[in-house]
Amino acid sequence: MLMRNQTTGAQEIRFMRGSEVIQTNGLLAVGMNYQVAGLVDLDGDRKADIVW
Image (tube, rainbow, N blue to C red; front, side, top):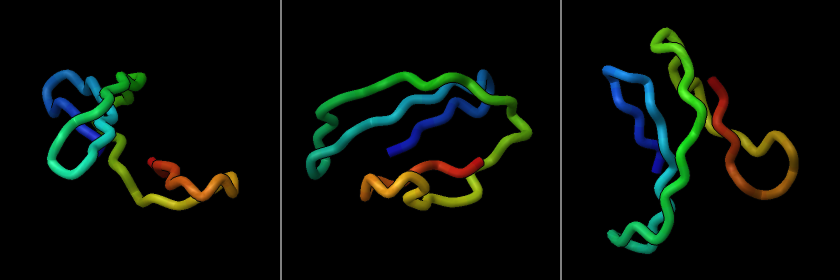
């Protein structure tokens, strides 16, 4: 789950198992004018990559 603070731009990824958070990783903040445009596997690792 991608979480983003709408005031500060701080972001984190939360890895879930059902409703339980099993790991949280902080991400670099991006400007508030950036929005997620989609998810796609860009590098062929079978994991979704975030497209801004």
